[in-house]
Image 1 (cartoon, one colour):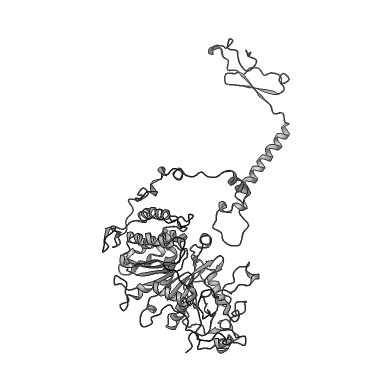
Image 2 (image 1 turned 90 degrees about the vertical axis):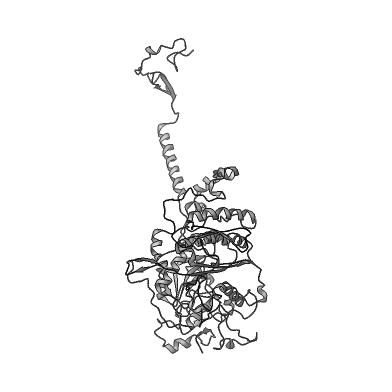
Length: 612
């Protein structure tokens, strides 16, 4: 039995509660218990705790070392990677290879799957087949558009619809996303990593964007001093393949455009073929149904998917691509001779977009610049990594390439050289200001409809066949009677100029990207800096085309295994930082000298598209 001088009183000697003293007992000499220090509980009873056997100075050193180690670990967690000189949208979590602390953390800990992934019976509401209305703001005003939502009645012939009021964006996505999940489960070839319900870009417009783009759906009435809604008609067209990974953003883009501009203002034409990632199945099973639900009239929807594969080796590549693009334009051509949209309204613009990552705000900025600048054609800026993508098509107002190509091996790690023949254009590009070019496409292009209507009847086409024998000398290729074998999309710009529609511009802040990683890093919409009065946003148009346009022929042969740069006779002047002979800043050469300098003794081909 323990005594009261030990850890407590013995059971037989336990005092009654009335006899317990709360005063501190006298302290014992330290010599009595050298390795302990007396402590007392609230009842005044002594509790002994062993002292550390280490010297106090060593304890301090160990404590300081522990704090320093903790500080280094914390700093290492948030350490950024070495700068590559390119803006990077990734977070520190995405850069774990450069953070040892975070790598260790990930090595020993992994997040647990949500319960609804482990147990299908716990699936939350938003995965159900019905719309999830829990997040709707029921006090928000609904659209007052004249359009109606349609749901096709299965098996009806002719097709019948159940109609209703237009859905909000939330209601549209609540109906679409379960359907996309269902299709993904039904089509095994859709890559599992594609989250078809999670777009990269925000599926909405900010208040500032709505204010900036308001004029696209309304005009200011000076007499009434208010905005008055107008009816515009946009033809959205694409020929695509392998786009399953970007369909989350495409569905989001279509939905937001319909909500903002009005679904009746949009006409869709889409051709898909040659995909092995489930693109055709996704578009066939979901696109038309979704467009009808958000209010797009049936007459405004033209979709052809799962087209048969093409035997490229039996066709001239550019001729076949021109045929494909004209097939995408067929619903537009079919409106002739009236040349009006399905509901009888005049066309406002034709918007072509490649298989690129885009949002509604990308489209609206292109529309905004096109309308406010009075342009005939307005293009974005497409990327393949850090490089400009559409290099074969683009020509500046000096008639030269936007960027030297092919890129020399020693230059591939350097920043891209842009507009070496047009310093003023380069300055505007660096400031994200729109600028005029001779030709462009660049992933997304908005064109006025007039040149595609009589009397001009512009069409996608290939260059006139040369009909030259394979062993023809180089000087025969340089004949002025031979048309440059350019891209089918390049000829749109060239033919626009031919008929007086030369106000073609690039909006460098509208970034179009072909890969998901590029889209995360470079695919965002950027606006010009309004704080530089010496650099107005308005383009100063030049209605005179360049005298000479750089030409890189596509071989006049079947198959797609050719490269236009293989037939270039020399690298274009200006691509190696030398002034282009046709640039207005070249004061040393007169007009005639600049026009003839390109066809020099080296045999370089500079094509005049306007020669008789």
